[in-house]
Picture: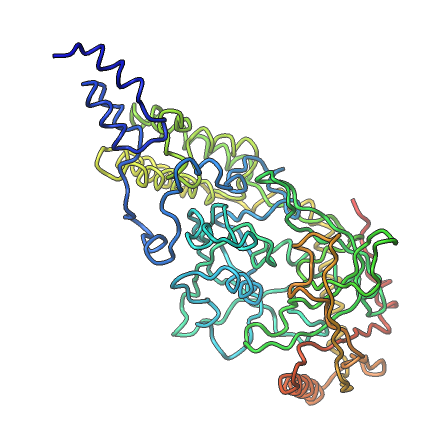
Length: 567
């Protein structure tokens, strides 16, 4: 027989790369007659979807495993932040955590689903009650899991429709709907009330998939949504009911190659305000594309007719009355208790520290990033605690659940690793559930002036309820044109054309003589608004109407509620 050293030399000369198939790797070690059993774990043996939420792969068609050598290129940095600074609202793409209070906008989600359809997915608003319109809803994030991109969009030949980032699948539970007070703005009240439950809708839960793209945001933190809407209404009121000339900033994803770069801020001035005509009950008066603006560009390249459409929740007033909100953080005593829980579970078994404390060595487990969407380990959770990343204790438990699910996906349940991960998760969850968590801190001080401004806006809204509505019908005009090549693609008009313009079609006129409106008068106002909507739906080619907000008489009331200065 041949000498074993010669055989080893021959195999060495023809050995495949480290990223070669598992079968090749195992065959090479068998030929060398190696007795080092851990070499067989260089690649995962889990090749077919199984376990919890298997429908994500079998029905929705997420990639179960990334193509060879492409796992490290998957955009996952936005889901791997470690500090509160990185998670500041408005400067980064929003990364929801379990326990967060968010606002969901069905009309914007509809656009995302139109461009990136999901196999077997039923839009949540189709099962909502039909008694009243829910153009936006407040929800609590109750669960988060991560998946690689959809296969059809990852392999798309159209660059604008290709997705390369990891997705976050959110389970949302509706906790509030907009208050039904009479509104003078073409978007819902930023104040929410509890949703009325019926026998058919005792638990209003649904799932949405969030990923980085240039479509309009359909998930926002509640505090950011409310702040933007209230500041926008304040600015309109201070501008005598008109939007023209109000300086604003719009934050959008840029073309930066960095996976988690800051959003680009682009300045402009509002030009007009519209009320869109929608076919779905839960799309009506959402504020979608309700505003047009003109970019602050150099005079030699600025086209006076070039306008872009944006939704009310996308607009940040350039001179707000208070600072933008930031994500809340856990109280120090809660973080101290969570750290103690981490130390406790680390001592459950001698294998815990060895297997779960540090990140997996991807030079040894060469396909780990091709199998695992968001790597998780105990030291990473500790880094997030030190960086004040977590908004509440539930989000820490969610990361521990991610660690457990990662262990199952890579190892299945045949080698004891997953059973140990389940033990760690169950013990950690039990310890954290027992921690009493006070109200979230971090945003409280920043919202002191925001709260006073909110009270002022609520007073203004109540003041505007005492209003007459007169509607003057006129033909709407539409002008078509190309989006400016000097403006990023994500900032162009949503349909690739300029926003529609037209003459005044609905003027809100305030009755200065009456300080009280009778129920009969309020009903007349509602009838008038309904007739306007009906006429809009029957007009061929009419998709929006231009409106102006009247604020005569507000200067006097404004002096009674001085706005706070910027901090």
